[in-house]
Amino acid sequence: MPAATRPPLPVLIAIALPVLLAVVVAGIGITARFAGSETPAPDTTPLATPPVDAPDAAGPECTSLLANLDGDLPSGDATLPVRALADPAPDGVRAWAAAPRPVVLRCGLPRPQELTPTSALLEIDGVQWLQLDDGVPEPVIVSYVAVDRPVYVVLTTPVDAGSGPLQAVSDVVRDTLPATPVVVR
Image 1 (cartoon, rainbow, N blue to C red):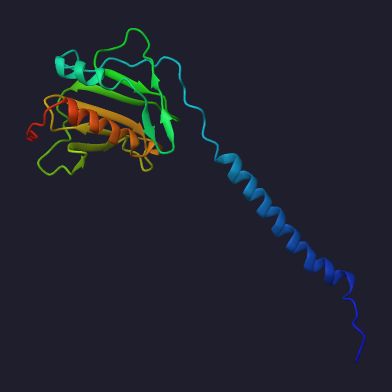
Image 2 (image 1 turned 180 degrees about the vertical axis):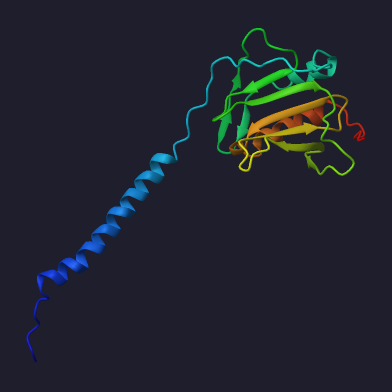
């Protein structure tokens, strides 16, 4: 039986270099993945909310709804704390701290132009919502308009917030505001 011979040094180097390169690239990828997965902390400073046309924002329906939305909102495994509004705060607005953008609820807005007889509506916990995104290929925010209540309620959330805020708000809307027929034109 012939004695085993060791391969020449250039052959060992030719085998070891690709293996070493693969290990280094894998290490860089794993490090970048963990470093990139950190979610920035949500901004908790008072939120400046510009006034918008909200003719029913100071009405009894919105006042009642906001009174019942004074707590935190669920979002996946986290909780979104109520975020204070900067003065002067417009009527009918509530906000929660989330990253990269806050969750904002506005009550008493006019009927959305996007609501047509062919609009697809989502029903969440007995509330019918019209979903609108920010119109870019990879949306950053999404807005939901409750269209079957005596006032229009709009909830705007970052797309990464998940369904928790919409479900929690749907429960309060359902329990606070009576259902009405959807008015389409």
